[in-house]
Amino acid sequence: MLAKRIIPCLDVKNGRTVKGVNFVDLRDAGDPVELAWNYSQQGADELVFLDITATVERRKTMVELVKSVARQINIPFTIGGGINEIADADALLNAGADKISINSAAVRNPALIDELAKAFGVQFVVIAVDTRVIGDKNIVHLNGGRLATEKQTLDWIIEAESRGAGEILLTSMDHDGTKAGFDNGLLKLVNDTVNIPVIASGGAGSVQHFVDVFQKTNVDAALAASVFHYGEILIPDLKSVLRENNIEVRV
Amino acid sequence: MIGIIRYGAGNIFSLTAALERLGIGYGMVNTEADLLQFDRYIIPGVGHAGAAMRKLEQTGLVPAIKALKKPTLGICVGMQLLTAYSEEADANLLNLFPIKTLKFPHKNSFKVPHTGWNQVFAEKENPLFENIPLGSHFYFVHSYFIEYDQSFTLSSTSYINKFSASIWHDNFYGVQFHPEKSGPYGETLLKNFSKI
Image 1 (cartoon, rainbow over the protein chains, first blue to last red):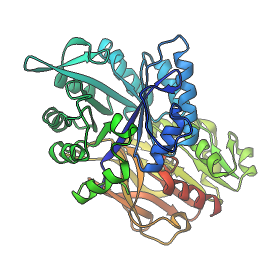
Image 2: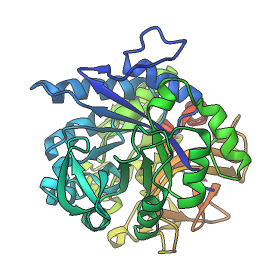
Image 3: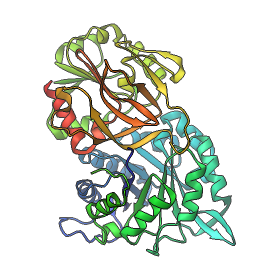
Image 4: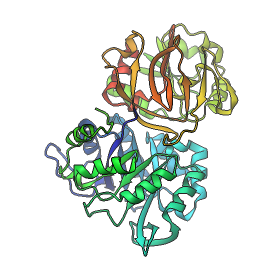
């Protein structure tokens, strides 16, 4: 059976991890490559790097990061953050990235999804969607949830799939940081609607939250950052609980 | 030394990085003369099988590849090229295996591309799967699959239907998954291939 995937997410700025990390064995907790290697040894199925570098050297630093990761890590990884054009994606693909994740650039220019899928294949194109509830509607947000758009979340995801998205990374900004669990209602709705893999993000605080998201929504993967970085959840423990709950995971 | 067939279909950085980590020597094959320098070959490939076949034909290497007698491993689309035909753009391929590459049929709750880690079961004794337990997970990402065939399937996996995770005939091998992205067992498989 196809296994459900567990995906740690690393925020990176100028080649260094941004959020605090509380791993005991790391020589350098700010080194994304060492952290990534550690996660791959723990049994992470995939990694996401979110690069928030804002300098003119951004593409170059991202390419260097991707090359270092691809040299040393034997699991797939996605890189996102500030990818605006085909040339960005091309440079990252040639540096060894398995997938790229696009967020704001796709909202501003949806045809970018078509172009990327045509140039590199749908499997390379992850559309990241940040959503927040306004009134009784889920609305797509940009800039880390600060800027509301006019797009309704489900409509946008359906459009992204039809344009060539190969995977959806859906982050609930209402749940993100709360450690109160994933937004299972919305995730189930999205997962039942699209025919491409869905990664759940935002709200993981306990092992039970991962059990819940897989059992209640049947999403393909679950992503988290701080619970892994601070060692609150260890991936081998998480996977053994998922297995006890008859959720297929990679041993 | 492994010769990697260069024909412009997809990125090989991750593959060469994996070979370097494992200490397996490799070089690039651009011309027929280059083939002589190596004792085994990998045909990589990502993307569209029909487009990949056209690029391979443009290199002029097709007759020489079909005549290879040394161990040769196709990866992902590189594996699909070894089959007779792909439903992707109705393309005729190398026909080293008289079997077909088909599109996953639509089935509720099964998403396409088949993306992620799935279990692989070797069905024959072969050194490629030495020290790899039955049911180990490998990383897949593909929308077309190679039909199951008792004569040619070396290992199988199941998604929507049972299909070939790997194929084997004489000196030719193919794997649908990405060994260079499949954790320790993927590395074991690459090591095994380097010693076949």
